Image (cartoon, rainbow, N blue to C red):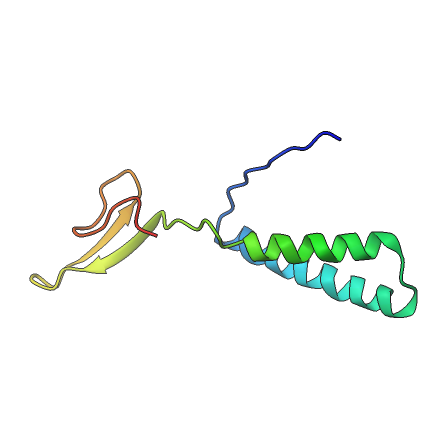
Length: 92
């Protein structure tokens, strides 16, 4: 059997939509399993639960804002364009 590994990058709204879709799939599978248990719904439910567990596992902030405590000025930052003092692109 051939096995693949997938990497996907989602923005905020896409991850919210995926989370909602996974919830709907689990609910659908639960209903089907109650009325007529059969193979695809066991597998789909299990896959949806595992995907949901991984969904926010490798989250990385790519932009943000902060306030300089000394000057009171606000800064907006975007990854690669200079991160705020005291942060790094490896902070999780």
